[in-house]
Image (cartoon, rainbow, N blue to C red; front, side):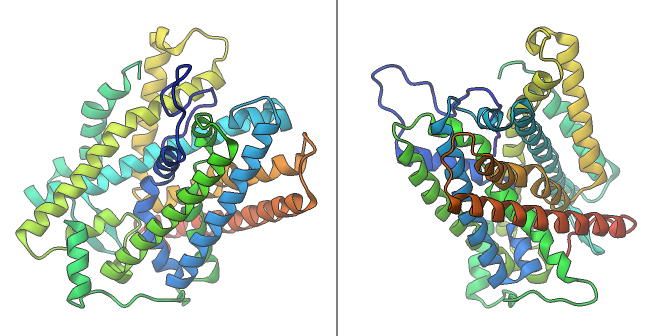
Length: 424
């Protein structure tokens, strides 16, 4: 998931005059790849928190609301003189609106960078959850040593892999699961949430930001729709993509939950350290885990580039181009990299970062800002039904996010002495 900057930057290649414009199928591909990102790793854990039926309903409702919010954005884009999300917010709320979008995109970018480092750390050095140790690939291969600890392994990756890349100025898991299903080794899933002295009703709200973050792609709506010949094509592409991604999310969620049951981790890749009883299966598991970690290492610089450009544009709007100012470029790069590393070490759990992103920046981009644009109605095109839907969307977003964020902060403080774990 790569949030675009606030400038005019289509995801597809610029079209020359006379060339055929992008198709609906191409837009579906771009929208789907924008939606499905690191968030997919935590979808199975939401089924543990909510149960199968509530999780299915939540995924469906969030996808439906996202479809509505994107339609709001597109309608006001086509009624105004801008082609970017920040531009639509600027028309409605002035510079405060455009800066708000930029800040939320930056928070989302930075959160994703931290999540990427956490997942890479999970793959290489494993994690600990409720006293249960999940070994990383390096520990499985060489045993547990100081040099393959989480902090040191991530430090090596950051210094020798990430740093050289970000300094550029221009830019068998499935088969194991199927066998387990056939052989009857899967856990019996809970269809409804289980509330006890460890899990309160408010803990259920912590799953909402994860789903919201997983469906947030609004920062790429304008770059993708810009390449289409008709506005209705983007509406169709978004609807198809949301149906496809909702099906993928629920399928992966139920599959992961059936395979690992109540032992499911916030990052499902951690669970695959013990999912195979054969040498070939274990090797394939390691290949999949390492491949995903390597993929994140390559995506990290691209996301860092967007984040660095946005921060520099916001903080130093009158300075020279960042690429031409070596001191500013290197300083900003190092600050971002060090901050992401320290955050990934201090809170080695993607659940909490999904909570923060989904309760703040992502919910603003997905629901609060589009709803506010409709209520502001600078072009006088909103119907009464639109305004009611926008108000309901904002109220639900603010209420659920406040509860989820408060519950997560309380849980984080409560678990800080015994290691981070996600609500169960």
